[in-house]
Length: 434
Image (cartoon, rainbow, N blue to C red):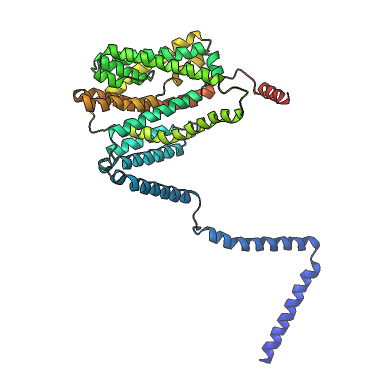
């Protein structure tokens, strides 16, 4: 025992001597490096518990999970409030239940489509996902049995959506641009639509075996040039339809002129709180924009839910696509010819002709109109109205994404600027200085 203790003491003395030698020989740089190493080690030891904590799910949840829970609770509260007022209408098979399911399905479909990002390709329009969501709801057997919306409800919602989008389009117009390009705007608003409507009537008469009345109904619906008189074509004569259309145009132009003069002179500059009164127009524009965000999923979801695969014949889709494609080619050619005398270059004319192709809102609103009317008053014409509805659905499904791709891809490549951004910034700075 005595010998082992003496050996241990001898070893400890050696260790103490060796430990003191580096302390004597260390330089200031060496001590600084050791201090930084100690600080790094201390920081890593402090971050280890935080990293271990981050691996666990935090409570309350954050990010996407929090958003999903919040929207789910809001949806449940809305459903409970509606159930307290309407009762069975919000249960499966009721109108409110169908509207809510179609709205949220279309909304989610639009958001999912926005998440699809392809490199060097512009994003697809959300309305495509909304349309497909309604189409899936209609053609899945179990879901279609419990999600139903009455035609009167669907018609009211679609007409409201059309009113909102037309108001929004009118508020977004630039009067100065319209004044400078009034001839070009008149050509583009009348010429291509008339040519495509006549081409659609011609091709649908000989390819789809439509009567001429239904051919022109399909042509005007497809060309989105006017509020198609689908109900009157089913119920009335051609002369009465033309007279009522002229009357509607006259009333619309007259009301627009009167309201334009009213806004120009009222309120006058000597009134009090003039800034507040003019700011109400900006508030109206924001309200219309937010309201459209609600009615857009409803509109395209309801249109998609009107198309049933089981009710289509085997060759219907091919015939409809052929008719639509031929009429669209006539429209593109007519647009290019009308722009030949407007002072545009060759590339600009190509871009205008292709960008005038997409179709969406008017077809979504007016497509089911003839079908609803035929079901009620003329069941023997339901086959024609169903084909019209199919063409409207295919027009949105094909032209909307292709038009977005053409505009997004060709615009930056074939269009050129006719101004220098530096000069515009210089002019803006001079205006701010004055």
